[in-house]
Image (cartoon, helix red, strand yellow):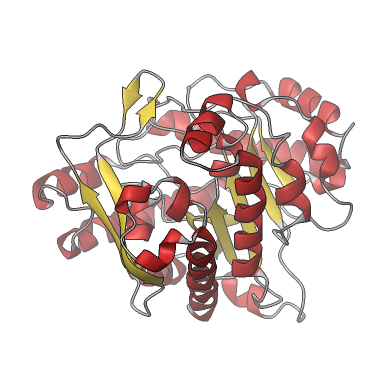
Length: 385
C-alpha cells in the first residue's frame, strides 16, 4: 500500500496512477446520524460539537477502505450534510441558507431539503476553510493515500439562482466566472499546502447539460447550454492550470444521486470534448451504470496519453452486485473507443451524496467496494499502474 509519505518521495513531475477508486461519500454510521440529529439546529450544516463522534467514525471508515485494498481513501464525507453545499458555505462571499417555505431541488420522485446558495459579496477562498482541517485529520489517520472531493467550480453558478447573486459586478457573468476560477485556484493550492496530492472536483453539471430538460432550463435563464459547457471547462482549467506538478486532479460526473434517485438523463456527447480536451484534468470518474448515461462513444474523444477514465459501471443506487464477467464485457466494449490502459474502475457515484444516504446497507456498500478492487485486479492485475 502506498502511503502519503512515499507519494511525497516520487520523482518531481510524477503523479500516482490508480486503477480503482470510489467517488468519496460513504453511508453515515448510526453514531454520526444520531449526533447530527441531537446537535444541529434548523439551518445548520455542521457543528464543532460533532467532531469527536465524526473522528471515531472516520477512523473506522478509513480502516475499512484500507482493508479492502483501495489505493485512495476518503473520510466518507461524514462531516457534511451535502456533497456540495457544505464546501460552498465555507467560501467567503457565499452563504447557504435554508428556506423551509420553498421546495428543494427536484429529483426523480422526491426533492432534497430546501437549502440554497446565495452570493452576498465578492467570492474568495479563506485560509481557514474548514475542509482543510477535514483533510488534515484524514491524512493523520490514513496509511493509504488520502483524497478529498469538493464540488467543482460550476456548482457555484449552476445551483445559484440569479436573484440570489447580490454583487452588482456579477451581473457580468464573465466577472463572476473569473472570480470563481480565482477562488478555486486558491483552494487547489491550499489543499496542496495541507498535504493533498489527489484532489477530486465533483463537476457533475457537465453531465446535466446533456439532458434536454436541464438545457431548456438554462435557455430560459438566458444561457446557451453549449456556451455554458465551454465556459465551465475554461473556468475549471483556470482553477487547476497552475497546480503543482505532483498533484493529481480528478473529476467526477453524474446525473444526481439522492436516496437512490436521480435528476438528469442524456449522454456525455455535448460535454466530452470540452472536459477531455479543454482541461488538464488527470482522471475522470464517469457515471455509466444505466442507459441514462448514454453510450460509450464519447470516450473516443479522450486524448491518447496519461489521462484516465474510471467508468462507473458499478452502481451505488441498488444493492445487487454486478457480475464480474458482465463488467469485463463492458470494458471490452469501452476498449473499442479508448485504450484499455487508459481505463480503471469506480462506482457511478458516492454512496451518500447527502447525509440521508442511498437505499442500501453498509454490507452492500462494502461488497460494492470489494467488487471495484476485484475488477481492477482481474483486468489490470492490480489497483495501481
